[in-house]
Amino acid sequence: MRLMVHDGKNELKILSESPLLPCGTFRQGVTPDASSSPLDSPFRRKLLLLAGLSSLLPISAVARTAAAAHTKPHTPLHAPAILRNVRPPPPLVMLDPGHGGKDPGAIGYSGTYEKHVSEAAAAELERQLLATGRYRVALTRSSDRFIPLEGRVEMAQAHKAALFISMHADALHDPDVRGASVYTLASAASDSQSALIAQSENSADLFGGPHVHATSPAVQQILASLVTEETRRGSAHIANSVVSSFHSRIALLPHPQRHAAFVVLKAADIPSVLVEMGFMSNRNDEAALRQAGHRAMVAGAMRDAVDRYFATTRIGIG
Ligand SMILES: [Zn+2]
Image (cartoon, rainbow, N blue to C red; front, top):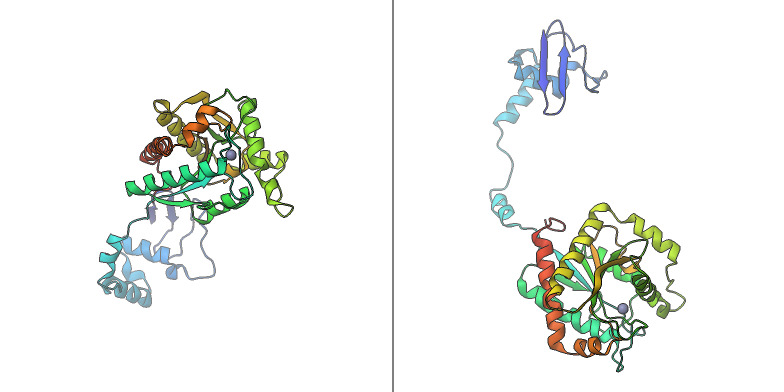
């Protein structure tokens, strides 16, 4: 007699001259357990039941099977109602205002500190994201304090963030250069300007003193290679969304979507982006970023980008 069973993936064949005899051959890599009686095998019991040959099962096996079939599931009656109401929490967006404490960041044309601009802009974006009711929001800092770059990444991982957004307004040597730009992590910079910005951002840890070790360029390149492909796609997706949102509202650098080896973007499993909202070295950008109304417009564009990102990706949801 030959019995054949499909388990959905493999076809398992049992070849036997008689149903009373132990099965002779298991195919598809399934090995019979020689130490137990073939009739005691749960797999064989199932086969015999399926074939209408339950009388061939040992009495104890039939009894166990029959008892199981007539036993009501031991589940508290109220549990299903509670389970139906359990919904996954909204995705957590981690905002990272650049610099802080003894690290002022860039110092603007008229003396504005980047750390104050980034903190105020992050607080506004937090407010706007929470107002949608669709997200949880956490900040790496909500006061003027120094946090090493590594600590910022660790905070995002500890919160299981679905998205990490670092917010800056740095300075360039050329005071005429103005406009926002958006960066993702890569071992090689997209252009020399981005390489300089990454170098400047990564040197923030020097403010931490001897107990905070700045990451060497060689290690930064290795870190970039550890980011998963899914995270890389997510980072490119949010960068693209931010640039699209800025397009009609905020002045942008030429080719505003760029990449470089930023240490703060190195979380292997969290899509991460760094937004330069403008340059403090430019008189117009600095003046604009000092205005709450302009920061609200920048934050509004970023909120729309976050909305578009989560509306078109499953990353971090459920
Ligand atoms: Zn910065």
